Length: 146
Image (tube, rainbow, N blue to C red; front, side):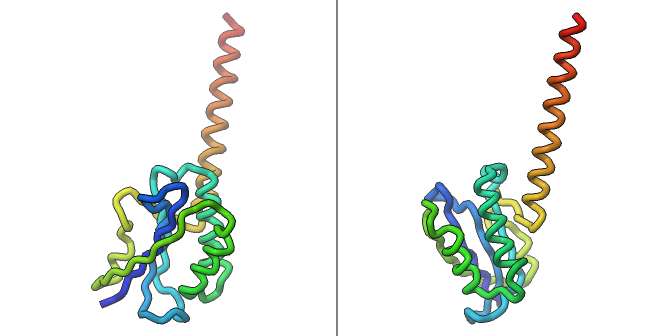
């Protein structure tokens, strides 16, 4: 049996968590996090401010910290969100029986947040903007010909 911990972070919402962090822990706060994953709610997955905050949180915990512990999650949360009007976080504990359940989203409307999520989001936005501008330009040229 393994203990799965979930940290629910609420941004501009008190009922449904915006960001969920999941990881395995054996009850020790100084233990290195195992199977760390971060999840973002689908309906806010294109909100730039929330993506930016989630990206900073992910990078500070997972990328910039060599061996992240549970204390690093809460320290980073306080540093990043201490001056924002976000509702505080909640910690949940679940007992799981295998590591396979780590790949299952915490709820049905969440997507996994990876280190490339922000890059992919900006890339898609640039492509959509380029398509829209080129379509408008093409449409404007056809109107001029008539």
